[in-house]
Length: 256
Image 1 (cartoon, rainbow, N blue to C red):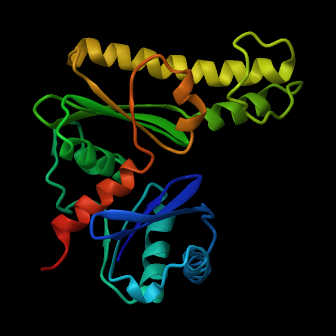
Image 2: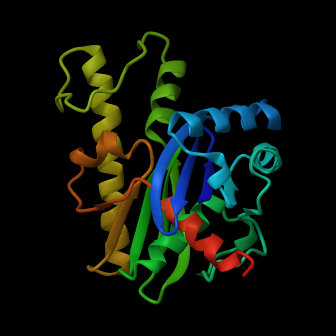
């Protein structure tokens, strides 16, 4: 089995592939201060919970947008599995054609999203990843990754609102909230969720104007379920797009 790890600012998503089939997906909270041994224990525990025999893991690939975690997670995986580990970083083979400023500075998670999006062949396309940030990874009709847009994520915006507006309460987001709230809790949920949905809809409309009417939109990320049903734009929902991209990159870089 292949272990794929996508480390983000809020969560670390772990996937287990048997050939090209994603059989297990689980998540850990991101804890930048944890040691490699602590992460090794946490990964071992969640895989045991999902009935994955760690002796079946024959390789691993990871990407991280948290620089302090990259080496720590790599050491944790090597300690647990004693297998080849590939990190998505500058110089790795991706097969991705990029026309952006400073390609080496592109987030490794966005590289994974672009690789998987291009592989599906429905071009032009944009991968909308709704996590700590909401990102738009854009690929033109020639399969060239031409750039990105980055906005605050749903929960990041909610937390900023709570911290900066002292009289507003903490809110658990509710997808069934009415558009026009009649109390403070509903009003916040409405503004955050419908606001996020409208922002994503608006960005897609502008991208379509620039790239063409046949634009394919992939919607992914942990916060996508909160807004997907509130959006007006048609999307292809793929909760594990980055993990799929990681597997593709592994195939391009593994030793034969």
